Length: 136
Ligand SMILES: CC(C)(COP(=O)(O)OP(=O)(O)OC[C@H]1O[C@@H](n2cnc3c(N)ncnc32)[C@H](O)[C@@H]1OP(=O)(O)O)[C@@H](O)C(=O)NCCC(=O)NCCS
Image (cartoon, rainbow, N blue to C red):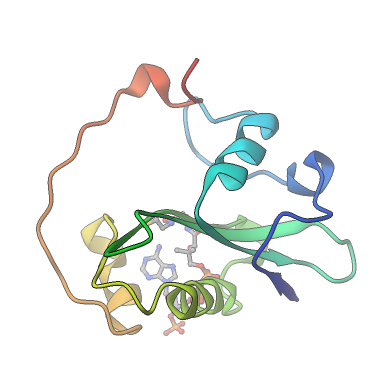
């Protein structure tokens, strides 16, 4: 597995591997590229044999105090091999100098993040499901 922190040399075909699995209305691959391109920090996991992206994490930041991690995903065929853990660790390294690092997740996955030094919190959110495939 190869891990990179930039989109340099990455094309839509490499990203078109089935991300947003299970989303009723998922962003198309060009929107996925935009999400990564507009993120402050990213880390991608590439299968070194196929040169395809099989996992990613992104963070948005004000570049002074805060960083927020909105998305983390490993495509189903590659899950359970430590890739998700590696992506979180590599993102934590990129954003370690910020005061606030936030992430929202389901209770069922809190153990995963607790293992990486994060703590439980409460939060608030809005989800506009009619915009799930991206802002138009
Ligand atoms: C969450 C996710 C990124 C983990 O990626 P992964 O590559 O499978 O993770 P790892 O192989 O590094 O697993 C690390 C540990 O977390 C546990 N874990 C992984 N996914 C989990 C989940 N959904 N719920 C609870 N525990 C989970 C694993 O059992 C593993 O524990 P172990 O080492 O004791 O076996 C992946 O399951 C995924 O993409 N899920 C769908 C999207 C998602 O839920 N993203 C998180 C949004 S907050």
